[in-house]
Every structure is written in structure tokens, then in C-alpha cells.
Amino acid sequence: MLCGVDQLFSGHLSGLRRRLRDARVGALTHSAAVDRRGRSLLTVLEELGASPSIVFSPEHGIDGVAQAEEAVETAAENGASEGGARQVSLYGKNKDSLKPSPDDLGQIDLLVIDLVDIGARYYTYVWTALLAMRAAAQASVHTVILDRPNPITGDPATLEGAPQRDGFTSFVGLEPVPVRHALTLGELIAMFAERDAIALGAEGALSIVPTLGWERFRTARAWGRPFSPPSPNMPTLETALVYPGGCLIEGTNLSEGRGTTLPFQLVGAPFLDGPKLCRALEEHGVPGAQFRPASFKPSFEKHAGKVCHGVFLQITDPALFRPVAAYAAIVALARAQAPDDFAFRNEPYEFETEAPAFDLLTGSPDARNAIQSGASPGEVVTLVSPVEAIWREVVLDAEARVERARA
Image (cartoon, one colour):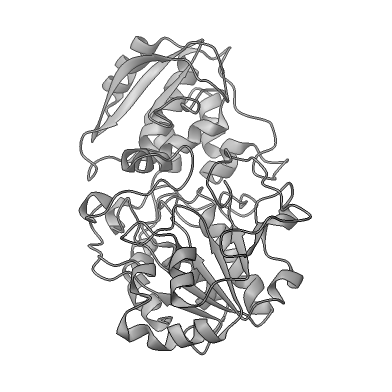
């Protein structure tokens, strides 16, 4: 399997290589975006003779060390990266920081995007890429996406998590799409570009180098290359597989395991009874997963330094496991067990101050209201998990759409 970056020296991309060498190049990337030999995009571009003059970075920063929602400021006198490129953060303290400025885009002719996405609507990298592509198109800067496969599969049968209603889009979902969307970053960006009449292809505003040899219906275990952790709390493929559901815990006062070595697989709080929650989940039934009672002490984030009690989730069959349904059930059962202590998060979340975080994540207030009214786990799951059949056609058409955008 060859990702986009792996193909830059291939014969079929000779035209793109010439374009890169002749252009003023900018890059949107991070340290996780490596080729099959483990070399970063910036190293590959330097070897190609197309070193960027400016490097944009998404949430977590170019080196991937900042925690979730931690602003990464662009210094007034920015230290140059290796190769002398100026570094610009696209995840600062406000919404204005989330896209490249006209001044920065005025310094380049071509923007190369190479980011490691993990296939969930909440993961912000695809939205950074979308905002950057749109800003670049407005500035007459051509965007090239070096695409990568979806590590949790591109199988349309795994679609899960209803798209957001009007009024519930945010930086954890700028456009209405399913939570688990079964698309690659390039496929998503091409879909929005085509909808918005942004010209595709080498002569248009957006071109894409698709992955070669990706077995769409398989996870990253079939890639024959190591999983590249794209953020501090995404260390393994199993973390990525649970994340489309595990991120729902961020909208509550339960710990999602940040500050432990098992983020999103551990869920708990000081006020929960782990064995009781485990029995309730087993009675409810979660296909493709097993639970066991767990106690843990987060070193940071929610309940830092306190012993939390809850469950540890492990996937037994990725083909059967549905993360959104699983974690919606966990939230409903945790609230039922401790209604006086459980709470939904009310603090600002991803630059939004009006809608609760749980509503932004699920795409509407329905699930939160149902949980607060004591709905059963099954009833809550029916509110958040199903996806309309039309999205299956979107996924099945994705490769043809990317072909129309081929670099």
C-alpha cells in the first residue's frame, strides 16, 4: 500500500514534481505524517527539491505534543523548522486562528496537505484541511492533498452516528456528516469541494494523490506498516477504533481515560461502581466488545489524582463493534447509576459557548435530553447511532470523486 506521500517520486507524478519544484510551496502537516520509511513530509519535500517556505500545523501542533483544546500560538518571531520554513499554528485561542491568513497564503502558490486522520467526525484535522483548502482557493493557491487510508476502514457497513442538525455544527464537525463516516480525508474534502463548485484536478483549485493498494474494507492492521499516532491520546489502532464512541465521554463529567495509558478505553469517575456498571453493560449487550471492571487514577484532565471506578473496554471483533452505540449506552447507564453525581459538560468546547459539548458531539440535544429523562440505553442508541441509507451511496461514490480530483 502506498499513501500519497509515498508516491511523490513515482513516474506518474512527474508533472506534480515539476510543479512543486517551480512553485512557492506551503505545507499543512504534522509529525505523524510519515512515508513508509518513517520520513516526514517535510523531509520528503526537501529531498524532492521543494522545501516549503511556510509550514501550517493543526491541533496538537507540528510535533503533536499539545493536549486536546490546548492553544498552540504562532510566535511573533517564529523559530524556523528544520529547512528554514516559518511555522504557523492553525489552532490558536479563537476561531480566527483556524485557517491560514491571506498574508500567509500570499507567500505561496501551492499548498500541500498531508495529515493523519482517524475516521471520526470529531477529529479536527479534516476540518483544518477543509478551512485551509477553502482559504487557499479564495487566494488562487492550488491545494494538493496527499491522501491516506481510513485506519478504522472505509466499509460503508460501519457508518454510524447521525449527521448534525442545523445549529449543531462546530469545529468537531463543520459539516453534517456521520460520526463514523468511512471516508478518507481526501474523500471528504473532495466531496465538499465538488458540492461548492470548487474545480477539481490539476488545473483546478484542488487535486488529490489517492492511496494505492488500500483494501477499503480492512483496518490499519492490513497495511503492512506501523500505526502512526496522530495525537497524544491516540496511541494505537484500538484507540482509534473506539474513539468515534469514546469521544462522547468528553461531553460529560466522566473521565475518558485521559491522563492514563488507555485513553477512551477506560471510562469512569470517583462516584461510579465499576462492577455494577460492567454487569449492566453485559446485560445490555455490546457486540464485538468485552468489558471488565477497572479502577484508575488520571494524572491530568478530569478527576486528576483521584481514583476513578468504571470499565475497561476491549474490542473482540472490529467488524461487529459499533463504538457510538457502545459509548452511548455507557453514558446512559452511568447516569442511571449515579444521577445526582453525573453531569453533562457545560464549559466552552472547541470554541463554542452556547450548545453543550454532548449536543455538538451527538449532533442534537435529543440524546442528552433522553438520558436526563431516564431513557434506557437502547432508546438512547436509537437516537444517535443510525445513519440514513443515502450515506452508503456517498461512500461508494467516494473513490470516483477522488479520481476526478486526481493530481
